[in-house]
Length: 271
Image 1 (spheres, rainbow, N blue to C red):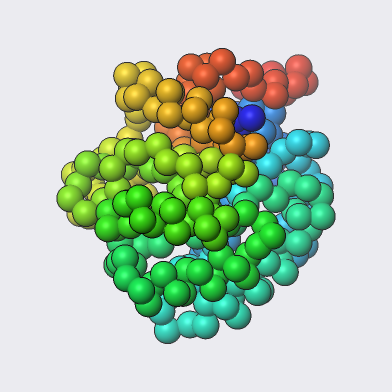
Image 2 (cartoon, one colour):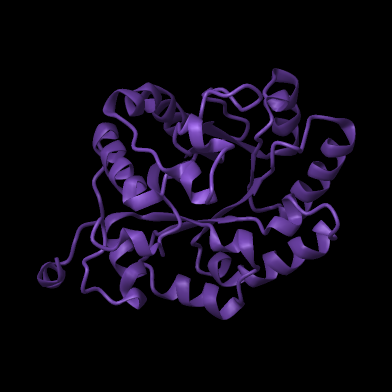
């Protein structure tokens, strides 16, 4: 099973590009769920969400909808915090998604400064153990983690690795298709904005990129392979600037032969 969606959905600059201009922001999620059947929750990286907010997300999405939750930055980025305490709080807050069977995984995305080493491996192993039996997905930004030894180590921990498409810059991960857990395959598209990746006025400028069909087709075979090997495979587009993630996610679905959930007839008047 392959599901394609976006990293986040509540972007103001998606109005007009994806959301109808007259659509109230409180209806963004409902509109999104008519086009995609999975979502990567990104707001959880900036603050641990309240159980009521997560419960609302579970209630307002249809059966079969899946949510991947990006871990709070205190767990993966801020080394002056207790990551285990923050992880326990996060796991408690997303319990409504688990109970509704809509919680796909927890994504641990580490920064480039998180380099391959024994201390880092020990920390990661403890975080992975704390997330289970839910499948943890690990995304690295430092290329030192991309080797067969690490992949085998993750397989032993029953953790999934996140495959990424990002700018071809030294030190970042190459666009490789890897599977370390038969339960989940995961691919994230960040865009290839080489010029703005490190030099930007606004972090969102990093993700100002629209993939061509040729670039998307480079991943078709790998994503299809993950779909065959894993129980569930998620493809998440993070090139969110001006709704470009939506356009690329829709096109990727077409290239993979997937159909969207469908747009309700009574929403056409808002277009």
